Length: 169
Image 1 (spheres, helix red, strand yellow):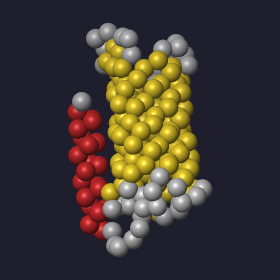
Image 2 (cartoon, one colour):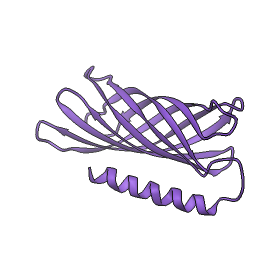
Image 3 (cartoon, rainbow, N blue to C red):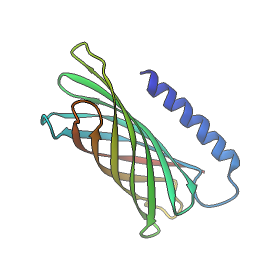
């Protein structure tokens, strides 16, 4: 749980700094994502589920968005903590719909049968954001993804997450 606490503290401090640095503009300083995630391992066929939390901000308007997130996934015999940093290219499809394509590194901590191995992976995602109101305060997201482990087992998995977006202005 230590990496999750560090990520949460880092994201709160980052959001606070971005909020103070913002001028009077329409775009949010950061977007918080709260949702649920499901993952299916392509190597052994196992599935896992859990909550997910991420914070996203835009360092370069219309070119780069960064998302830092943590997802604890639980399966029948293991618990896995995924912590990632995704670099995304955004496209605005309409005033209410955004599409992003992203990739980045992921750190995976697994507790399985008394073992606690750590590994690194690469992750690619497609992120769809839906903002029902004109002013982007609350919305919904759906994010399918693919993960390739760089550890000895070279595990591969596909997953999907979705949930609530909360904009911080």
